[in-house]
Length: 314
Image (cartoon, rainbow, N blue to C red; front, side):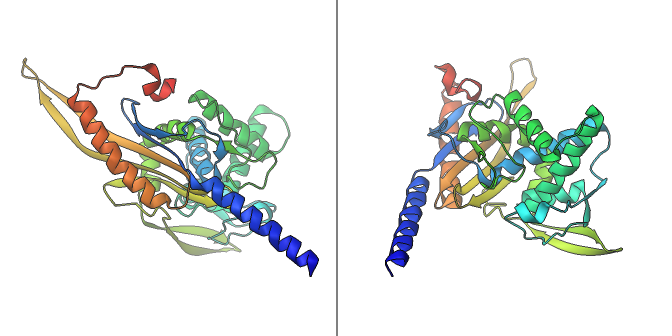
């Protein structure tokens, strides 16, 4: 009985610690075109990244498909080890199943399926190793590519250790709200990525045992379609808490010039929420707050008084 009480007490303390860790979310609202930060709290605090790591996974996959010339229609096979290290398995993919890279990216971004993310990492990591003419672990090579992309985008507070973001690798992956904003801006600038993240539902094909299985994906982003939100990623793990990155635009503004020409300003915000007990509610409130601050900033002539008001220097 005493042993049971001790274990129960430990679990209660652990649950309380995790709850306290999620009590204060790290947030950031950034202008997608000017990189102006309009709202921020604990932007540089390192936190468990959870499934937001899949944003980087998808971008590495898209970059590889473009740079290699192979494209996203090639089939990748679910590796034997994938189900053993996967957490979120909404598609119930099995070793030997084959999907196109396109459908794997959909599954990774819409359903946050860990097996799909692992399969992407295995396939592309293996291709990298073959092109380099050396052996090694495909996932280690893929995460190396993830970290290279992050560093290239100015992320100094992040470390990715797997393609899915689950905290079951050592060391566990982590990032910051500012770094996730940097990576999300990179993703949002790619029309292809917005296409992968702005659909509420999508059918994908799994090639299994000589036949095909059609699987319906449902986008887990709770704000998709609300307030013009068209992406990007919802995620939640026991350590990361609720995480959500959304991006939304407003109709462009046209300003006539004295010479008869016109200047067009586009408007898009990226909102990052990490470690929240109510990520959808917080992200929506931040989006509305961000637009208010953004409009005031435009009316004031878009002033920047300090370098750290811009994301590249934050």
